[in-house]
Length: 264
Image (cartoon, rainbow, N blue to C red; front, side):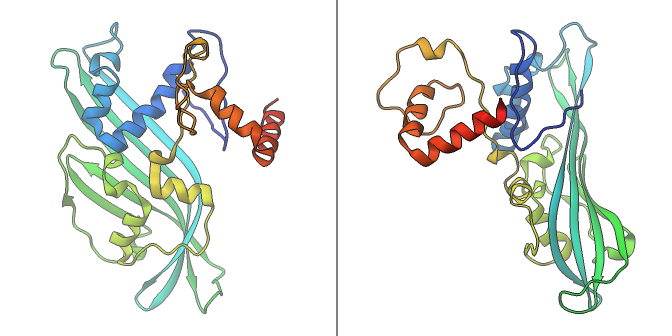
């Protein structure tokens, strides 16, 4: 299944059509990043809930996420200054599950940044020639591998690092975040000169910044405590209170009406 999401995505469908399962995918990714793969699987109910009970003994879970980016930074190599623009980031992993042992194994785990490298002759001046390439970080049985194409853009040889166990994904480590990757590869802190705020937020904070809401239509009919948080809960149990607070504020009400008008 391949789905393209916008800045705001609303999922609508009939009962039992898979809406909750789709939303659960993003919760699963967020849980991996916050709590680790083992705990994320447990929060889903265990491996048996991630497998097709009618399927084969050994099954594969493959997830790939790709997002356009607009992030640029400057770095030096052999006394030459280069502007590196990250245009797209793709992250994917493949996990195998066994019905007999109820164990999982990480088969593939990789992040790919598609970039344009451009030499800067003087400050704020760019060379006309742009070289397209990739920065790749892969987890191979617990060892971290870095690669930059074209090879001449490689700052220096970086040996694989045995930084975590084979049961951990890049998603649950610091190496998932672009600021740490820049620091490792280019030996300098992240200093973006050009950026898209939404892209930068995803690059820095990953799935932790995602808000996921799966409203239960029956909750609105249940009794609710008066002392409820002002922030909307993920199951929507305080929706009426949140809407009431929004409608009291003229500016927030205007934003809500514009959003509803846009959706309709």
